Length: 471
Image (tube, rainbow, N blue to C red; front, top):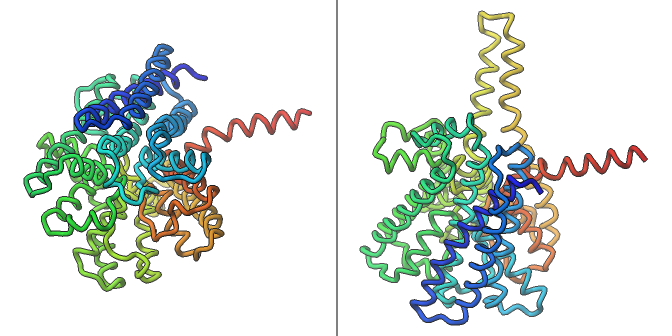
């Protein structure tokens, strides 16, 4: 395997191992002996694997293929190692060894992809150390994506440019400094919002802290009974803010905490806010619910967080379709959110606008070149959206064979593919094993994106095809 891929993967494993120390400390504080064994094994696997791979470090730029391979491998290996605590403790009360492995993989994949589906009916009864670990897998996955994108841009030319895009000034070519800057920003949010909730009376620090992490990263949601305690004006407003901060791009968060308020409203942020406002108004009318209820659920689904307190099954077909569209669009690029990303819609809109205005340009000789250039610029965004829609449709057809309507299957698969985690009830521990792996595949594809998967697997199939043709 390419050493530059191994080196970056090793660093990511090391980071995951260091973060696993936090739930280990929690286990010591609350004297949770059995979970500690599982967490020690997990930390050892992360750190041992990370140090071993990092020893093979090679400081070279990543190509598109190697960056895609790194991204895909990360979201296979991280969840696989992260399965250890669930395998050891089996909070699902699985009937067979295969069920236990599948359920554990599902929970781990759901955490690392920041989706939030869960087969654990009552998380409140879990050991506190496992609760903390469960939430931190979302941080590992969410911030891990940031690192992987940074790793792709670590060349001398690209990294300073990326620093400008992120709004991080004077970082030069220091990849790790950028990564830890990102980790620190989201860490500040977690500490600040946990403190605010504590002041409001939510004094169970572990429960409140994990809830804040889950909400910011767009991961696991509390069960309906537990969430009732947050259904008041102040906590609901805080939750909406957290979901929004997790869904906007990192540049917004960096500029906000740096006090550079004039720079925070980029075109992407304005479009994202506009989509949510318009969708809130539409849902208010077609679902016949209160406006704040409409706003809350729109922000939740658009940010791909997936928290909901209304009965989604009671929504009309038009309302559900709107929610599916919101999940599919997702949040901003370079954020915790999943989905197609608002930036791609913005890019297509900008290119279409340019193409429409080109015929009226005075530079007649350059018209064809200009149109070709805009189409080339638009192609990656359009391809990503097209592939997303195709995968969504195919996986929906497959999932509908479980015995649910196409409409419900579309919602469940759309939720998995956009890493949202909201469900109308079809995604549950009672699913046959094959459907569990289908949803797992949807979550991984949704996190790394189908274009990344194709960039990895297509060259392999092309080589095999060429070999067959030769014979």
